[in-house]
Length: 487
Image (cartoon, rainbow, N blue to C red; front, side, top):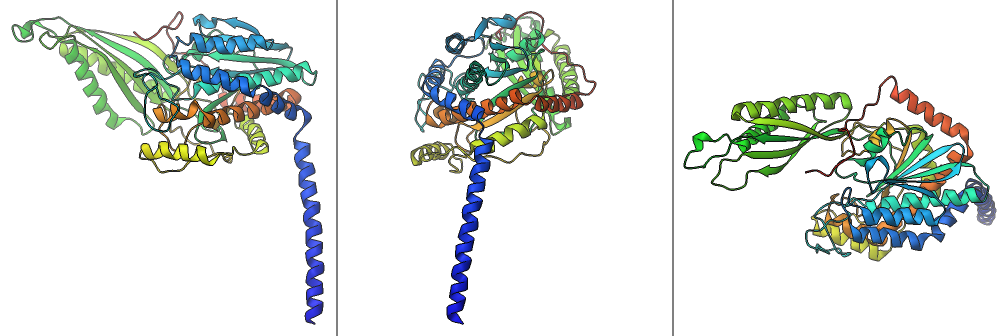
């Protein structure tokens, strides 16, 4: 009986192995089926251009130019687009550093966005310990050196597929400046530059990989200027009317107002001018205010109240005041249909793998930041339920109001690092950031292949967009004329 049992077990194991081999072959065949020739082609294109893409990204990282001053960064990208056969229009929407690069003809029209501005004051060397590359200079703490470069890499991959006659249509790369301050995309939207698109692609560096199913906060930026009357602060202060008094009363009012706003609301301010010397009653004061909410409707409530508080400060101090609109942006209108298409390509591409040295580098940064040493997250996040916006804001929101947007987040920094910080700058200028950039270029290009090859997918994405938009009318909230640097 024992012998028979072992023989039966042996036969069972052989049968089990046989079925496992068949299963493996079936899975391999299925995997190969999903990896179409077109998708293999765009992957090969990104890998072919890898060295140049890293070079451009590092040049933009080193240049680290802030909003509307990204002349070198814009040129690195636009020149490479020209080298690869794109027709390029520079200086669109009144911004010298904004440009559009097009290739192909006919429909569909698929767009892809790229940013390249840096954050002020966070210069950092490529090392995991805090040390400025140039003291007080800007740094890429949001990874926009990777953003624009990866998007252009994806656009070039699609262009090369068109050259082979495999797909038809038009690919449009948007070089979008000034996302960190005055939100340059809004001016481009107002000019109608996205109106003829069928779908627009987008991505942003982060600390995880996911197809974006989350919205962002709408916001409005405005400047309050107070003007009073100067006098000697000790000799005859009764003859003075302090602009700073008005500003302080305004900020006090804002801070009391915080108790009565919804948990989703946010109020920030930055004092730009508060007098000149201590012994003169301040004649001028100036403050930049930003209010945020999860949608335009609730944002308007905050904005209206903040303007009343600004007026009240002027009345109490008996000074004059003006309110100057700087810029405003909408929340992202999520397109879950598009996100699901992207998700399939993320899962097909698979996770980002990191070396032991990269993980140690990331953990050293986290330790220096008093954060848990979570290393790097290169896994593919499952498609998430859309929740009320928790984080920041982006002018991608305005684009999403006029055309369906498919958006990606990809790992470019250590898990849990504070954003807009030296910790991110330290990653975006080396291999950790490079891997996220190349991953993004591949996954975005793969998703665009699906859109170019299957018109029904575009129809379903547009249907989602129309249902979400309803009868809402888009009205950009920006001042007339071209954008200007904050003064």
